[in-house]
Length: 429
Image: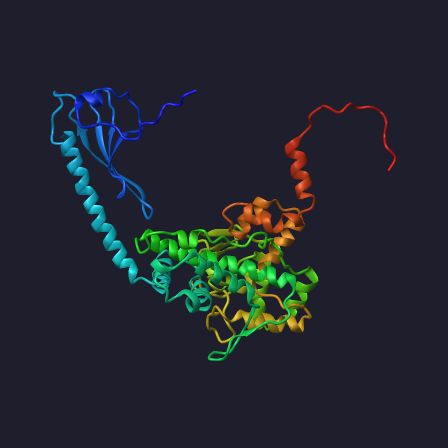
């Protein structure tokens, strides 16, 4: 059987040639420069067609520009009605504009480094109201700038990004080190520690990609291939939620000094984050509805936390005698709690309470959610209490703790097929 040869280039320069074509959405294309990726297209219409210019290169892909109507019908007139020659001239003028634009982009990108991309991303992150600015900045300063910061973004290669990723994953976990001292690392890491390291590397990679993608969107990088093809490690982000038992919670609370103890109790009773708790004001507690308003959250969305009777009693005591605009929780000196105040206090309290390894303040949030899950609270309720946008994160971390959560969900969803015969025979257990 003879296969008809596909005609890739067509005649468009005369009305009679164009009249032979059938109507279709895909234009008929005539190549103006194969090397430069230039083409002029004609889309057939009911009375007259339209002209379209197309440009293609590896950096930008396909770009199109409508040029005007074709002069197929002599009765159709107007400034946008173009002959073939006029359409080709308009297309070539647009191609010249693209060449100039692309050369300017290349010149701008040539002096634009990864450090510049990180700086611009942090500014944009701040402008968007990002809640983890300090954490993102530390990630860049510690993991990205030393290895990649001085590289011009147009010269960044996939091999460099992949080598950088693997180096972070292979080095032992960092240990807190005094300023101006050589960075210390842990020794003899376990398989679990290596899994955690790869999980951390994935988060660092995601921050870097976010910064470089922003640079690409702002025309500082002509292509995203250098980092888009570097994938995160697989199967390293399995949730391993640490939470306190009721006995551990009691021991931890009893070992804390009074001012910090109030923060720990608030976290265990609400599941709120450290920053959310330290920002609470007296007016945020509503004793009538028994709820607590979290106005400043990580997601940027406000939420109302439901308080148990025990929690309501606690907040009535903590807000008694204070003005509505006052902070509910302050240090013993009366000053506000700072972002880094909780770390050393949690470590000391853990040691005294015989909790090993020591827990962070965020574990108190996990403890609140885990207790709800183990007592049968639906995943949607827990998600609302924690401020999650949906139940995906909640199910990922806490569903395995819920009594018969998976079994009950499967049985309720599947129902009965009615294909099994019933009888009076009962198996002996």
